Image 1 (cartoon, rainbow, N blue to C red):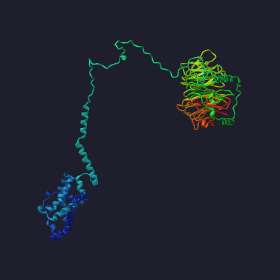
Image 2 (cartoon, rainbow, N blue to C red):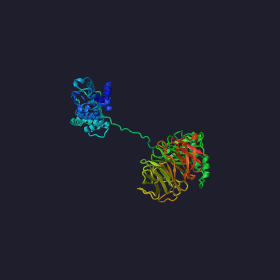
Image 3 (cartoon, rainbow, N blue to C red):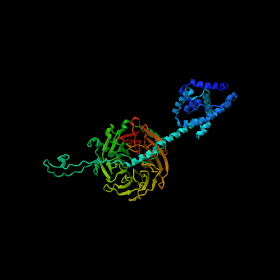
Image 4 (tube, helix red, strand yellow):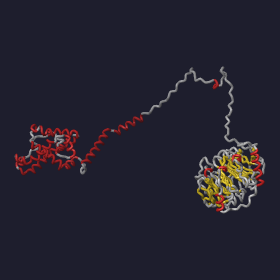
Length: 617
């Protein structure tokens, strides 16, 4: 027996010695989780459940030393049965923290109470060996018997177990039922409206003291008679000037000065000495460019004439002297004679209107007359020979935007209104009223222009359309146009016929395009010839651009520019830019309104501060 036992004892003793040498509890707990050794299987054991001699073998097996293998199998089978009976209930009921303490207690009890339990050293070693074999070889079988997660790794089984335990824990808290009860409690509770109690008025209390002046009583307590309230008069910022002729009195100098009287005499006699315009011929582009290149500007040809923005300009047709007229936002009409030196002595400013002067022309029949139209509903004629501004047309209930001469002798006029209506005015009839008032199909009219050859045709530019009418067929109730130019996408600033033949029409639109149409045959449709890209976004503080034809060259238009350096652009009807007037330090602002002399190479441009810039050769 001792020899047989010796055959099985040496490896078991090594296991026991190894345990004795490593009695650190933390080391044992780590091996319990990670290595699944025999020490892991001893965790749930308690020696209180152990019975001495339970694992003893039959003598038939122990007598023969060759039956070592059968001995081990028999012991393993017995240990499995005991392990399933004892270990499984313990693992289900014991936490991990108790497992470590049980391991410590079991390991100590194995070595300290061997005699009390009547367990031999060899049997104890056999127990440890049997448990190690059961865990290493048959762990999968035992696990599959305990749960339904066969085929999963230990980590996954541990994870699923934690999920189920957490779900059971939260279900035991009954949170949904608590939330439902809280909702019912909140619904039942209705906030009580806190109404502020008004203090009770004391019947015999003394109220606030009030002055006797506010009570309208005298010191003795006698009520005074009520004073009638006078209505407050709101002063108009731009009151209308009185009707009738106004004296031509300059606002910037003495009207009795000899200099001003000499100015009036000079321009009254210019009409007698000025030669009639000969037959106009269209020069070549090459010579036209050369003439434009010879036009220059200097400090002597730049002067401030009016207060505020310039809305309209005109050049006197004289071939001897140079006179520039400008209409301003403030209602002023400024005249600048460039032959006077210093230049300030040639400037005269008048106030014939109370609102912006939108249109200004020298009379084609009498150059000593300058006609001005204003937004205030008045149209006046300044006569240099009489030194007065005569009233031609007055309509206080409407606002005028533009006008033009229907007859070459300037006897009849067509006046456009901002509300879309038009007036026919005959200067030969007495009074300052219209001959006919026509309602057009346009909601607003900005400019009106008469055909230079067929003067019964005139053109109006409105919000997004350009209409051409026949003055012989105007209906006072509602006149329909002969032709409509509807190629524009935004509001139109102006539309003008070419000055010599009227075969072209140029329009200025807010969509940054200049359009040129072929009006040689006025029919139901007028074709579009050219579209010129040009920046027309002047903004709020600058006067809108209005492209105008050069009276000497009807295939070229002149328009202001927003480009740097500041300039005035000249375009050919084909879209080519012919010339740019650059002024250097003399031209540092935008000239929105420009006018070209009818026979001479003189260009005048006005900006939004009242300055006039003149280019001349």
